[in-house]
Image (cartoon, rainbow, N blue to C red; front, side, top):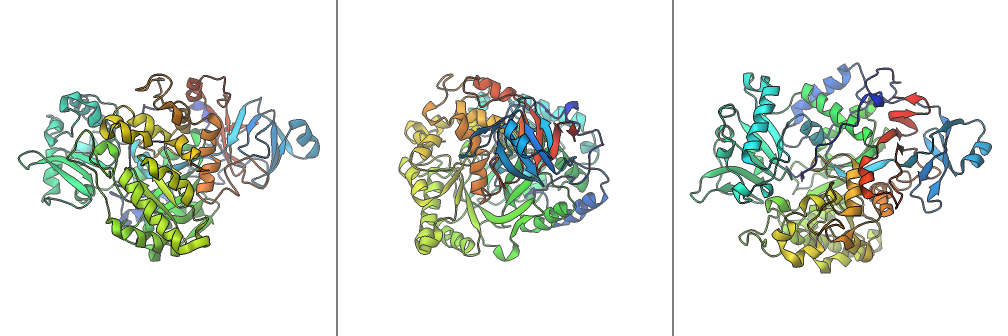
Amino acid sequence: MSLRYRQQKPETNMLDERSGLLDGKAYDKRRGAQWFGWQHFIVFPLLIGALCFISGSRRSLINEYSLPSYYIIYNARVYTVDDVQLIAEAFVVRDGLFVDVGSGTELRQAYPDAKAVDVGGRMIVPGLIDAHAHLIEQGLALLQADVTGAITLSQVRSRLVSYLDAHPDIESNKEWIIGKGWDQTKWPETNHQFPNASDLDHPRLRHIPICLFRIDYHAFWVNAAALEKIGNVPKTVDGGEIVRDSNGRLTGVFVDNAMDIVDKAMERPGEKRLGEAIEAVTQRMVGYGLTGLHDAGVLPWQLDFLKSIVDAGRLPIRNYAMIKCPDPAQYCGDMVPQLFNYGDRLTVRSVKLFLDGAVGSWGAAMIEPYSDDPTKSGFLRMNETDLPDLVWKWIRSGYQVNTHCIGDLANKITLDAYERAFERLGDQGKDLRLRIEHAQLVRLEDIPRFARLGVVPSMQPTHATSDMSYVERRIGPNRVRGAYAWQSLLNAGVSHIPLGSDFPIEGINPLLGIYAAVTRTDVNGSSPHGPNGWYPSQKLNRTQALKGFTLDAAWAAFQDSELGSIAPSKKADFVVFDTDFMKDDLPPSKILEAKVVTTVVGGNVVYGMLGGFTT
């Protein structure tokens, strides 16, 4: 699976009784859910069952209340993310669009027929956009076994037994236990090395096949029962690793492209499970103020499903979907219809390519070997000589190209491929907005190339704070200077850094990302360099961080003319918070305490309440 899942603190469920999500009284104009193909377990036959789920459901997964078509929000602290007027008191919405922004007194006089809504001095920001996330994977992760944060192997086994106790049908139906979250960097008992299949042995678990995603979702760890299901395993695989012990025996760990071997033996979730996952993740998203995401890897045959959801009025958020080909190293543009703002919810005009793995599993492709294991330098998941032609084919088909790159070698190769495309296009290539997803470990000499070429670094602040405990040991003190180098990129001339979470690798709540961006500490205020943050010169300020989750994200999807800021003629997506976390005199810890009061998409409430109008 070409996803990168990271450690996260257990999240507080903000969708409590205050949300009104369960009151069943909402206007059912747009009922919402979105499906992102769980690439390794959901294939075409599941579309039929899932479509039945959509057509058969009689209730809304996300209730959306239709406000009056014409209203004024006033008595607010509005952070517009618009250079014309950065802070305002009020704005006018008509037919789902912002009409005017300014002072409450002036707007109420200028628009006397508009319904006036007093928000009591609360903070309002544009709708938050996660610029790199995985929707269905997050939904399923909320329902699966979770060993995140386990610091011993016995804790892993204990959590799996508890999960089995809570789901007795697994044993009776002879199903797999699927879970996520293990991280060998937290385990002194394994010397921080990969675990073994025998480490999952327990009397209650022995006969049940178990497959656990590593925290970065770039490795599987399976038990002996799962190895029996898998059967014959090749000696090697290109672009991945089948981990074996010193005697050549399988350990049960499969990294990057080797994960495909396990996939073939894995069972698929049914439509009931999928429906539960959709409901779980979409409720969380709007509860955290997310009005859109860039869905980082959607298989071609899943687009009809997404369109059906939009047609049924069941998608409460905006989805900028990146296509993932069945074989990501091959071109599949002839299978993919482009969609531009389909149903005011779905856009398909970009492709997700994958060049390497993740640093936590030693899979990120590095120019020099890893400092903590000189026998490893990561993996290229496709032939580097094929990348320029593949990039060119997608560009010529009208697609934005977004390439997963973690290691410095992967970033260099992709910058080289992009540069070749720019040279071929000349002036026509000035606004391609080609993206590198993650851009985590970059050579210092390659940082200025992002600005010179106009390549967009799509980055995730919580990756830095999740990795900071071990990454310097892994790549050394010299190379770490180009790691998670946000300010270095800005200082080099990069004008837009779209920010995301990569959920479910990190938490869904975008405030976790804003906090990590401005502190470079964990949620307890700690870092390897102390409370001022890990390499604090790379911290973003609050304005830069908010811009990354709003206007920069919209810009990276060619949607900055209609989304990302509160400005006339743009779509009325906004979020009301109970705390003004943008005030510089507010301690950063208070950012994490802020709660969403209301989330609005296209002028309509999808979470909470606004002036008496509630979901």
